[in-house]
Length: 166
Image (cartoon, rainbow, N blue to C red; front, side):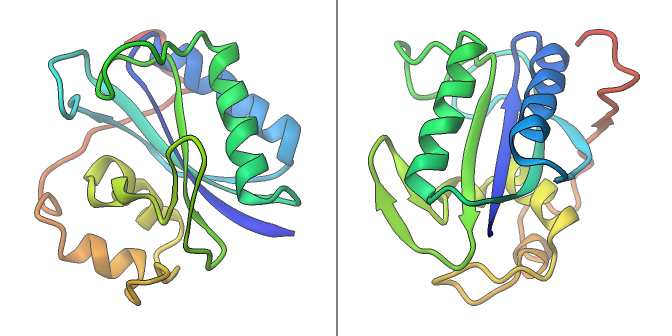
């Protein structure tokens, strides 16, 4: 089994889509580690706040097959890819790290994912996998979060179990 570190986000009916995505990930991959869910501002465009989380799953899929499966999951949530790169999303799930792989693949697959520079990706991952070393960088997720410029900014958490709607 291989370990994948995922970033999850949504700003269109985010509670609904993240709840369902977590359930679908559990159905496909079994037990997983899920971070707290954070409310963050949209990055790169003016839009509704996002709910962001991270998950660690175990899989027998290779990175490209997992990437394809995650895209299909996004599609079941009516993910619209016709607009600009930065825009509203029903569901966005990216592979941020995959074991100790460094690769570029089809469909914007980049591991480690460059979005690791953003607090909405790094903070949830550092919460659940602080000692994981980022391939090609040599620092742990906790070390990267400790020096992140948004380290001291409050990121409010949201419970998907208690949230009715955002």
